[in-house]
Length: 337
Image (tube, rainbow, N blue to C red; front, side, top):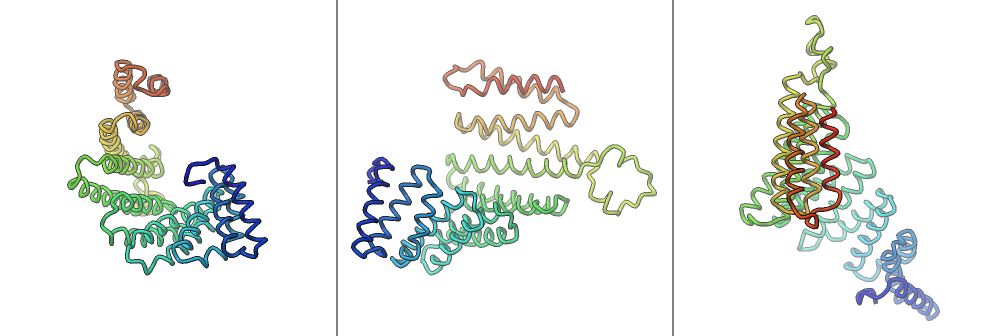
């Protein structure tokens, strides 16, 4: 019934009844387990994730005995439910167990996907070292297939951010930049083979956007205050206090690079059409405020004014309701900065 798109509530009632009758017939481990799997899927469709997970876990030992394919599918389903319940650590365990089951498969893509899902969950659980190891394994497997550039670049971007979780300094930022640059190269190579692929173009814009965010994190964390730059030369320049700080010129150069990256991403989003308006607006917003941080709020306001003119020139039905008010509010904030 679920496959036919029937109501989830009716499917749950039928699966529950089926499980009862299979139990009565002494077939709990066979038909009963399958009925409980259907019941869990029906509960999940009704957004009853906690009940779905409880039912699935109760039938898990029996379901795992019904072949490798089902064991993999069931562990993935349970992992997804646990993530929905904000239990990332046990979710990661299920994904890793699923990945282990697929090790011997000829196609490495399922194992790569489970390793990546496990890494996402481990990152959510605040286990960066374990997440990095899982991402590295996923990256290795994705590269083995040579057919998953989007998955590969998402892993690379995740590794970039994980490297900044403990400390944001010149070394970790350079490593993150290297990951982002590598992701961009993967996408550029894929686009050379398929120039019109919108997903690849969107991911490339997102990579530029995130690299700008990495640089912004570096500046906001490490920019030296004016009084720091004015310290007497007697202060040891190699000391940990002063060596990690960015001077005014270095910070400004990074801000200019951020702006260029956000502009580049915004242009790409504009070419991709209305579905990417929110991403485009976020890039414009970030670039405008970065201009303001450089002491040139007028330049940022000019960017927003150009967008407002563009929006007003287009039919209202072509654009979301939030866009014009958001742009006008941003313009007022920049002018008042």
